[in-house]
Amino acid sequence: MKLWRLRLRTMTAITITTMLIFAVALVYFGVSWYADNIEERIIAQLSPDASKAFSDIDRGVMPDQRQLQALIEVLPGLEDEADNELLKSVFVFGLLAVLLCSLLGYFISRRIAAPLGELADAARRMATGDFSGGAKIKANPIAEVAFLVDSFESLTRELQMMERRLKFNTMAVAHELRTPLTILQGRLHGIADDVFPLDKQAIRHLIVHVEGLARLVDDLRTLSLAETNSLVKDTQPLDLAAECAAVVEAARPLMDEAGIDIDMSLEPAPICGDRQRLRQLLLILMDNVRRYAASGKFLRCSTGLQDGRPFVAIEDKGPGFPPGVEAHGIELFWRMEPSRARKTGGTGLGLSIARAIARAHDSDLQIKTRPDGGAIVTVVFGKTS
Image (tube, rainbow, N blue to C red; front, side):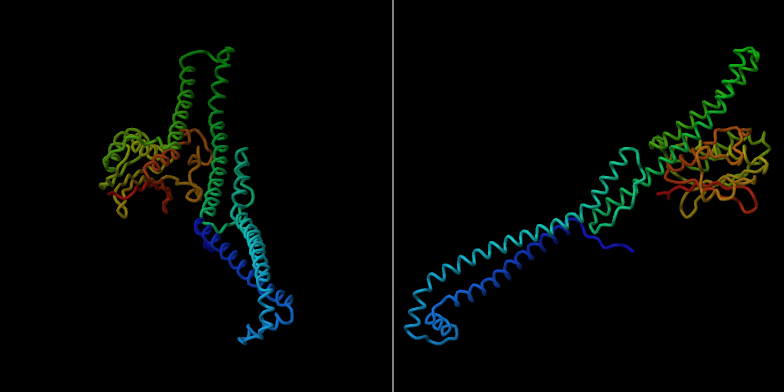
């Protein structure tokens, strides 16, 4: 249920107005009550004649001259005493109103500031590297404070996710680097110990692993550019149909070598994007078909408009994606084959890079499995202007 919240300035105005009304009411009713007591005490102090004259005047009856003279004689002193008592009552009740309003203001300020104190404690824990966030911070009726609390909790969740992602990425990078470095180290030690001959074949073997490491470093650099929003720089009006046709012609020799038939259904799909990065995305998707879906012997590249939005789709008839991949998405270093074997080559970063390029163009990469086998990877862009 959504809570009704006030803006801070509105809450401050309401609080100040309430305390002022409370203070004025307390002084007014307190002084009125005390004034009645003063009158009763003064009447009790009068002589019988003066008291009888005061009572007659209060009832609207003309008092006796002697009684009236007795009242007139004591009246100035009684008025001074009543005024002093009344001033004292104003001071006392005014001081009481200030004290009670201060307590009320302290209580309200504590209610407002309590979440801020919890935020400060959580921020100090985060400064030490603890992103757990602790218990959920209590809701607050102040809109600005509630917005700050919600933003802080969102930031905490994002930092937790980033921390988990960083740990996973670090382990994944270490995992991917370990095998080629171990091979290189073992081969070089073998050559140094004269176990393996130092010939051109051995050097070519080492170069293959060095090139694999270079590709991995380049792919990691590409992903780092995506994290800093520096992946797409040179944007211009493009047609996805023309870009797909160019990439297909460039990739056709490799597809022919793998025995893959290419089918194209290219309708105009105008977008504004980075030509180099978009061709890199398309080449990654097509190369994934060659590596992991060559058994289907089929690749279809489609472009056009879907609900007014340009799209490009790469479709194959291979083994398809593992079950549930649509739900958990694409992980870093994720490969289509469950064994993560390197027999197909690549760094395992292809789809991650493709998704990063798609997101840099305000779109996303969607993957799904075809009902009759195979996979479809679609990138849907924003509506054309």
